[in-house]
Amino acid sequence: MAVTKMSEENIAGGLQWLCFLFSWALFAFYAFQFRRQTCGWEVIYISWLMMISYIIEIFHGNDSPAMVRLTDGSIAPWLRYCGWLLTSPVILIALSGTGMPAGVYSRRTMKLLTSDQGFKVMQITSAFSKGSVKVAFFFVAMVYGGNTLYSCATVYLQAFANIQPELQGMIKFMSAVFFAAFIMYPILFVAGPEGFGHVSPEGSIIGHAMADLLSKSLWGVCSWWLACQVKALSEDDEDETSEDGSEESDRASELPAVPRHTSNVILGDPQGTLVPYYTQAFTKLPAALTVVDSMESLLDELEEMKDAGHRVDMCLVAPTLLEHGEFNRLRSEYSGVKIVVYVEGLANIPEESLAPFRERCDDFIEAPARGVMVDESELTQVFYRHAESLVGPAAPIEAHLAAQTAILLTIKADIARMQRGDAPPMYEGKSKIAAS
Image 1 (spheres, rainbow, N blue to C red):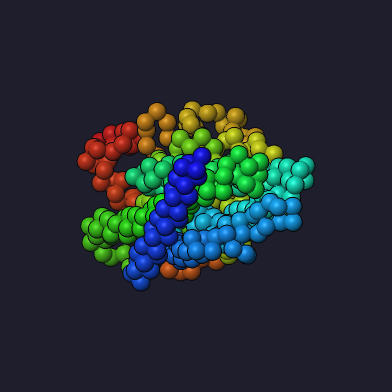
Image 2 (cartoon, helix red, strand yellow; image 1 turned 120 degrees about the horizontal axis):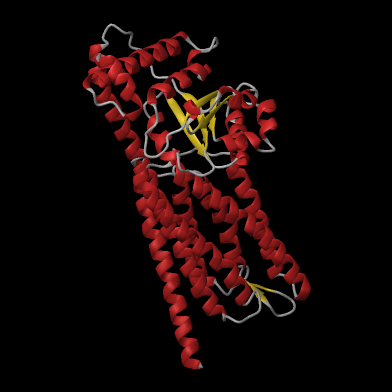
């Protein structure tokens, strides 16, 4: 037993030093990256707090106030709880912006922070309680925690849908690391000295050190790397767009050179099957596309855009969302947003079948199906028909010129493809007409 006790103490001490040294190295690395403007403040703050808390735990972990001893003889590691309260909100702030430009926060961020604070406060209160009161506060904490994990899952799903395909593997890995680590904390709480005492204090230290290495160190490195890749790919896309457009710009030198304006568009695809098609198609339009997978997420996104002062011109949604109970709220609260419904086999649907739905939406568009890509010509027409930010009465003259330029260049590219005979399947009929 003495050997086992000594082994646990040695392992716990070794892991504490490992966490300290690793967090110190990451803090130095992130600080260097921050100077190069390739790193956000969140991971720097997390590694700094982790470094400070572990050096205190190593030398004064059993002293007051790092360790609180209650009147009934039980103990509560207050230093650990301080670390939770200080680092978890920042981790969730970083999580809420996964796959997005640095510094972009949303209403979803506030929901995550509120739920997580409830989880932490109830769990700490449970640690300071006994008997049935301890169990009651723990279950309340689990309700908050379950809501937090559900909200985190929606963030990962939307990030997976919105991010470039080559980075989706990293989103999967980050989600696995995140959930594995954050599920460890309540398990260690129940089994450790604060709970039912099945795990010794040294064993609890070992488990929490491993969870910290996953949730704070490894996840932080992944978050930094992903942000760098998103930034690099965005810059590459801009360079490619500039290179691809140079030839067309030379051919259309008589057209005015105008600044690029964008229109906010939300894609509501509950199944997620059309996301890759529309994501690729919208990259060729002056549009900022956001993907959601439910009516609730769509309304949340519209509210976040409204709070941020951004106008949403168009929502491209699945037909099933028209029948959702919250659809009337969408139309009443966001009457200025145009609703376009994508429908498979639209050309073969009789007008009388579409008539009942026309009162609930503003337009229809043919959905890609059976391997056929998006009809970019039709999408361009629908887009500019409803992009009020670009062609509406309140749009600046520069936006009007940019829209007209884009339409002309699109028409020229379509004609060139049809004349070459290499148009996609939906242009075959048009190609034969052009050839004749």
